[in-house]
Amino acid sequence: MEKGFIENGFIINLSTSRNTNQLIYELSNILEHPDVKGKRVCLKLGSIDLKQSQLLSIKALIEATDAEIAFIETTSEQTEVSATSLGISISQVDNGIDVPVQDEKEELETDIIPATDHIGDEEEDDDNLESQRTKEDVADINSEETEYKIIFAEEIKEINPINTLDGIEDTYTESSQEEISQIIPAENADADFETFAINEGLIKKEEAGKYILLDTGDVLPTDIAENTKDTKDLPTLYLNQTLRSGQTVTYEGNILIIGDAHPGSEIIAEGDITVWGILGGIAHSGCKGNSSAKVRALKLNAIQLRIAGLYARRNDTLNVPYVQKSNNFTPEEAQIENGKIVIYKKLRRD
Amino acid sequence: MTGRVIVITSGKGGVGKTTTSANIGTALAKEGYKVVLIDTDLGLRNLDLLLGLENRIVYTIVDVIEDRCKLKQALVKDKKNPNLSLLAAAQTRDKTAVNADQLKDICEELKKKNDFVLIDCPAGIEQGFQNAVSGASEAIVVTTPEMSAIRDADRIIGLLEAKEEIENYRLLLNRVRPNLIKSNEMMSVDDVVEILSCPLIGIIPEDTGIITSTNKGEPIVNDETALAGQAYRNVAKRVLGEEVPFLDLDEPKGFVAKIKDIFAKLKVKV
Image 1 (cartoon, rainbow over the protein chains, first blue to last red):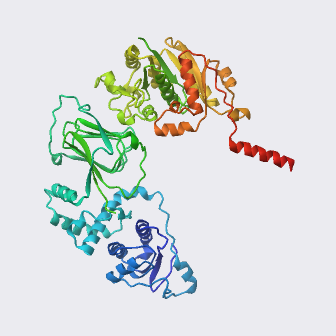
Image 2 (image 1 turned 30 degrees about the horizontal axis):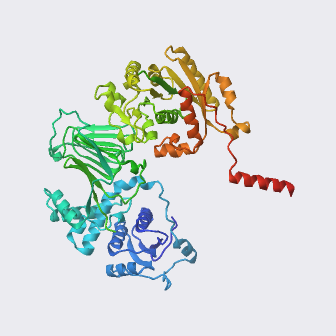
């Protein structure tokens, strides 16, 4: 990283970023550098539009590294408004920048801090989503004070891949958990979530579109009795790995996988199955006849979904063997309703 | 009814056994015969993908052998052609889950109700191969015009000759590139037949359409315009005993090639 000075500080050029995701990603990479600690930072934001909440996140990110924002440079009106309301001083690019420079030679180097290349870093995204979401949520509380916004953060797609920085988690995790528990009592959190979401049109029931029901009662032998035990009481197997073709996970309880389940893999659980990633293989929840078991994934692309004695197969028209990784996945959940497997999906409002 | 059991094998991997199985099977089914395809490549199954049937598989050959379901339940019907069905391999098990006798029994049972049972053999000459060959009475040896594939095919033919059950075996030469043969960079069909001294059942030209058809899950014989599809249809006819002349693989020159030729001539003149 090239290094220069503005009154004990840096200029970070982010004006090449095309979207907020990329911007925050690049910024977080630059902030990892030990030299940034305790310095004042000038942000060149270019023409990118930042909402107040987003700018607040950026500010928090910088402050987490013990640095502080000296001023920002932007050509966007939206960003300008956001900055003013947060009390961040602005220097507009068009008006010429007033940057005190110690040494002329160094100024040339100062101007551009090269954005690092992040191809191949996608693997880490999943791990960091959670902490990042928490951060976004809190940002929303502060800015809009609408209670439900916490759960339905308006633009989930804004969740950014960020290398977790020390301090950020400490600052936000606790408070956000408090906030959420205030709004929804833990016992009936699910029910409230659903009613609210359906009323708000956030959830759409997909019945015929994505999966079609092929057959019933074919997966299990008929002598196994169907039940609807609460899966909450079952033990949970936690796996932090990618499940590859030919690998099978079987467990007498719930299974939680942090990572993708590739096509050709099998997950068989007596309780629920949750995949924090793309589910591409076969998933069988409630394999001992528990029809209240569910299958959840960030992206349900399973070749076959089995719940208790039912199974649904992927529609032939959706023959996409590989799903492109993305930060914009909307979590999906499959369950049995009226003798059919249906998939719930939260709709994004954009 | 007693059907014919044909094993499709090669020794070397990646020469096109599975593609050949899917295409000959589909072509025979299109002719109106009842066909069952058996994938014996346990743990590395692909035949279901080529036929686009992956999402329909509930039971596999291992479930049949371990008595978790009936043979009839495990047969997956093709999307388009009801004459064609697939007995899939288990993806989560390995070759030791099946033995030769069990596979032979399955073949015997399938023979009774079908005209053709095609067995897609795994690469190698270990147990997987021995299993696949056990129930068969005929064999198609797939090879490409490369020395390594030919060497492996030779080894396989030797093993097949040693088996009493195999009544006849024929050679299918895959991925032939006529323009390379012309420029003496690839062994010619005659060379390969001479080296292996084995009767030929078909020559399949290299065709980029195979890649798309594999990805789509649609055998190339369904594509009436593809040259490889035509070649596979001819192979199916030869399997049925018809005499079909081998395809003329000299591709007609494309538009670009013609233009290039004209320019080449002009340059010479200038």
